[in-house]
Image (cartoon, rainbow, N blue to C red; front, side, top):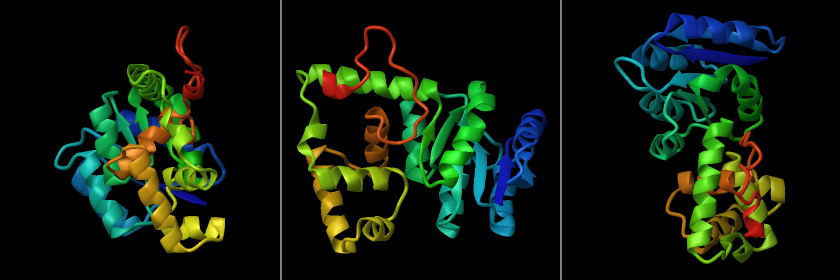
Length: 231
């Protein structure tokens, strides 16, 4: 049973999400919060599997709630809700430990797929967010003359990168690939160096742009290359 906490300062939004989630037989909404402080308290008290947090909440914003709640309970999975499709908000959310970033305007369509993906230790982004990230990535490739840094990675490094981007720890990656934790750490360091990535948030964003993780991204708009390998 997935135990879900919903935090949003608008009661009608909370009720809508609760109704959608509780229609699923394996989902239980264990609590609701109207502000960030209450959300943080309930995360600690109720120990939900997944916390759905609005970015803009009184007393404490959703990104800060995510950061503090995950620090206290590393097993917690966080979905961020936002009105903003700005990449800076996405990166801040990822740095805080969120696994999914949904635009409020598309919550009804994205909520259940996001919950399922996050419950499976994967990442998920609203299609509109993924489109922004993909388009930006393609533009970067064109500015670099079409060179695709993905080709710099070995087969094993690609395997490690996908598992990391899906939210697995170094130890979990080691177990799944039957290699040592130190070997995973070495691969991770090389991946970051080869792709010129500075943080885990950069790694996840790169994976989204490449379609490596379950991002919910739509087909590329007309005139945009769908796979960066084709550039």
